[in-house]
Image 1 (cartoon, rainbow, N blue to C red):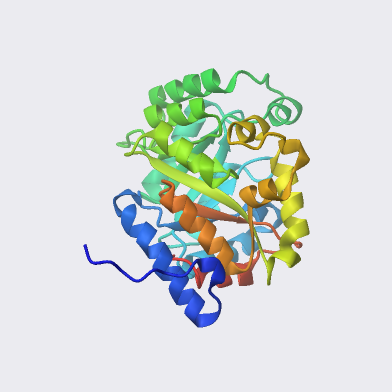
Image 2: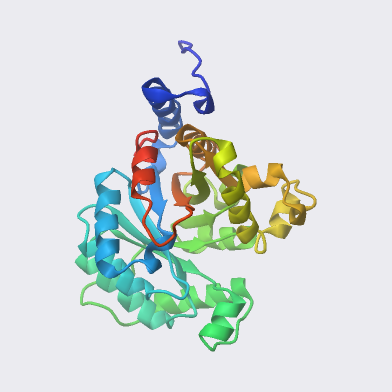
Length: 325
């Protein structure tokens, strides 16, 4: 094979030349995983802030994300809008982009309702809705929803059994294969390999992408969400990156120890950098490349900003110029 000229690291590239080099570097990772796009495109946006916006605002933001070329629009379900209704709003506001309810809480609706809602959206928007099931959080399940939180793995397995057996939905529709599991623990990743198209992993270092790929096997979808803070340089983004990492830490301590971060509670600079890609756009693009090279099929960007009540439209645009959207 003919040897190609070595590409400079994306973090060293600036200006129009840097955008070209970053795209070239990332397109190489895209060719490695070209058979595993799963209809999501290579890059997406994780819209954590949509629950802070009125419905007209999220319609406008969704259309912009699509127009910028991103392949998938992801959103969570916590204490804001109901996930299936939110998905319908986003699907009607767009034309082609995949809409992924990435953290659909299994305590928020019974399995029959979940199956009927998914089949309804699949009928209306064929191939454009992806259901991401989440085993929830004790405080949300018990304090907010009034349920008894149960062991996540067994509860998820029973929920999937009930979804697959659900009798209700639009006529002539089968149970949709378009589902993934939100997974952090390796056992949940393994269940995703068994019972779903794959897994989505939120806010973990690149090293864990390799772990998740090994647990999933080669033929399942692995979609990872990268926490990121965009700015002129790393000094400008350091404080917000640290607070973002601190917020992500509680549910990840044990996994981070297994990855070699012996005292994650200390939140040293190495751990902050592992959890949060921050700095200029080319540095975030480099992190995307690292996830793709480690086995991810799709990377969504979870942008944290100092103004969470406003969609980071200019930042989405800046990142799109550096990424293979």
